[in-house]
Image 1 (cartoon, rainbow, N blue to C red):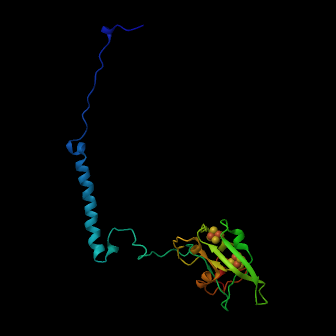
Image 2 (cartoon, helix red, strand yellow; image 1 turned 90 degrees about the vertical axis):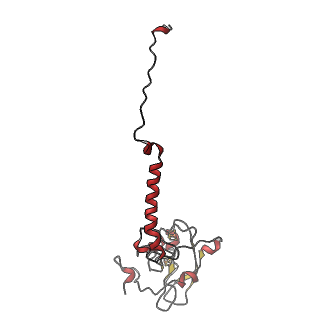
Image 3 (cartoon, rainbow, N blue to C red; image 1 turned 180 degrees about the horizontal axis):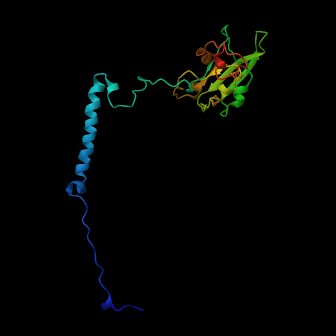
Amino acid sequence: MLADVDSLVPATVKIVNRPGGWKRQSYLWGAMQGLGVTFRHFMRNWPRNLVGRRALSDIVTLAYPEEKRAYPPRNRGLHRLMKRADGQVRCVACMMCPTACPAHCISIVPEESEDSRIEKRPGIFQIDELRCVVCGLCVEACPCDAIRMDTGIHAWPTTRRADAILDKEELLSRGELSTAMQGGEGIFWRERK
Ligand code: SF4
Ligand code: SF4
């Protein structure tokens, strides 16, 4: 049933003024204040940066790669293969690391060792750094401290996949003497003489 038109009460509109004066309503004042903060930081940082006193400025970024920050000791960088006292590779091609590797990026082809005390050594040892997820499981799996990731070096960018595959010579070029005892105990077993 339709209501009688004459009985309808007209709706009232309540007009509420915007809070604040023109400064707040135009946003101009706020924008000027923001620019003022930016300018203040600029005047504080730019001259210091210009005269080589960047450390005294508020700048927290690094001009990488010219500037580098030291990584903590447990940082995982590029792999390296460690050496024996005679300079030979410590790896005995036990295949623990490729077995543990979740990315299947380690390829090892064992060969016979000339040293009669050692059963095998890697003839081919390759790591595909593009597939590597930097988990460190290969280092943990190795029973004789033959592989480490303590170089502090990033895998470098490349446009050719083949350049990201590190071979035995490359991995050994960063290697050093390791005196770890096989089956050593404790958290510092790799440093044990
Ligand atoms: S760090 Fe992880 S992903 Fe990379 S080679 Fe070692 S086990 Fe494989
Ligand atoms: S776990 Fe160690 S010894 Fe075994 S294959 Fe890997 S690097 Fe060589």
